[in-house]
Image (cartoon, rainbow, N blue to C red; front, side, top):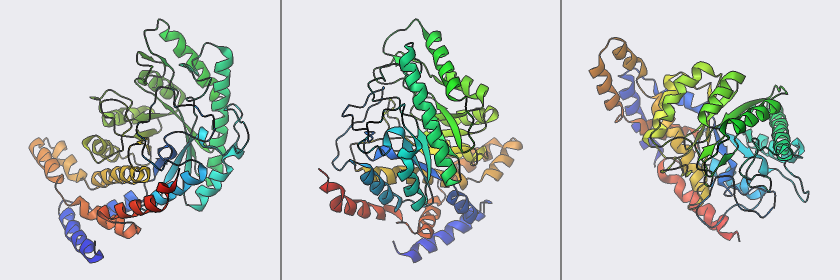
Length: 418
């Protein structure tokens, strides 16, 4: 698309938005300051680099077999760097522990050290990225159905030590980058069928977490994440939403809301205004659940749009951290990064362009017809012209132009992977 066409469309959009009290330049500046945390595991279908040769376990599943999956750390980095060429703004990268550089060492998860991520820290600095981190309780011989809630003291100690060490890694990341690394704790613990020990396992999980969080750090932030169920663990989840809301609010921890970890009819957006009253910050893992936690690529749909609008309406851009968490192995993986990240940004753009001041005046005056009418009319305002200008100013492809770049990279790079 010719730049002059984009600029002409933007000038019209700017005037249209100004008529309802919205500053489009200010909206673009705000969006420029929002960093999305991309997830490294989209590049290789959550395989990691432990070289155990095992399958993905722990109640999660990757479907599809599209060619070109990243096979090592160099390929993951190359794929992420390529995806970032098509995404406006400066962003973060979210790593799981299994993505350390272990070389020929046989490092078990209770032995991981910051040195195994020194290469990632250097690479991220070179590419202008900040790093976030996750402990990894799945796909391990000691995973089973229970990790931090395991009644076996030896297994539970193993996972406690693993998670403690992950916090130390996150601390080093945060210190090196001059910005706290957000460290997420999610464990799959649960039961396929009925259990009569719900309270017992939750007591164990609470004790494990308390022991993990005993040490205070200055350069990392702790998150805890719930789930409804996992594949093979359908009847009971130890770390439920109720458990972690209680734990997070009582311990001052960030609560992670994964958009795929709730009932399909629940609104994750509606949870933000409540949580932000009681917790310092909220972490989001954004995906697109299709009937279950299927981790489809994020798109510009009502759920994502509602979520981003609620962040802006709560004036919480500084308190809500936005990360992506999907792993679609059925399509081009670099394309999945680009489509999903840009969809999250497009949703935020629309949220930032909402005529919120006027809508709030209508509501305060009880003028609900006018509020509804403006909400509806705002849906058809030329937000896409502002988005196109945002991309143009950021020096990334506008509109569908990125598709050709992703296709070229596939021809020249990923299609040649065995």
